[in-house]
Amino acid sequence: MVSTKHILTAAVLGSILSTGALAQSVDTQSILERYAADYVVNDVTFTADEEFGVEVNGEMWTVTLTHADRSYSVTAGTPSTPTFYYTATGDILERIDRGEISAYTSMAKAFSTDVTPMDIELMDGADFDPSILTHVFHFWTRGFPEVVNYDQQDLRFVHGGNAGIIYYQPGFRSGFGAVSPGQHVNEDPRSRTNPFPTLIICVEGQMTARINGQDTEFSEGQFMIIPAEVSHEFLNPYDEDAHFFLFMFGEGA
Image (cartoon, rainbow, N blue to C red):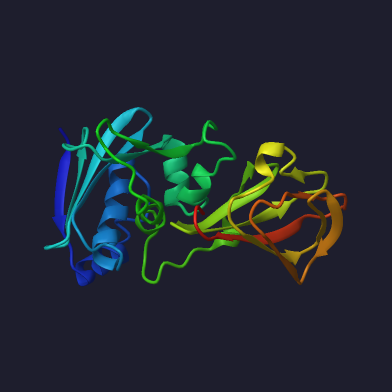
């Protein structure tokens, strides 16, 4: 069984980073160690011991994080107690490590049955904890503050458009993306309403917003708030992408 255990201070982590020892993705274990090392030292949301799994190409790894001494271990095998685990392909893990796509965006799906490059599963006997939503962002980023170059990251085709995810926590969801010429966001009737309000801000280009079946031109510099249970679709009949930010909030978001 492959296992490592480390205790890091901020100074030690900085020294390791400066040598370039963490600069390249070598294998799954080294990628996970880089994230764990940063998380236990730099992340203010790490406030208690954690253990979870990461299954990559069918192989399970256990990440154990100890708050008292800021230590971590990455071990081949299944977590000792029922918990959540991430599933990922090896190539998506490497792309996340290189900053080409976020873990959230890798999980983005229109419907729960969609298959995505990365996802979250529960071991038998484990219960879903809403705090897992915030864990996705904070574990799979590095540095303090956690600055993300979103405009350099790949998007995924979701709900009929090109989407990236910014941040989720209970009661709040945020994303960004583009509606390319000819695309129709929420063309599927199952996608058209939410049980919570939606704020969308158009930051570049123009598109047609179809709200409760009524078409309105929606362009750069404008935003709209769509109340809960109001049908909304976005179409781009123009020649250039329309770029947007999306925020969903309230009970159930």
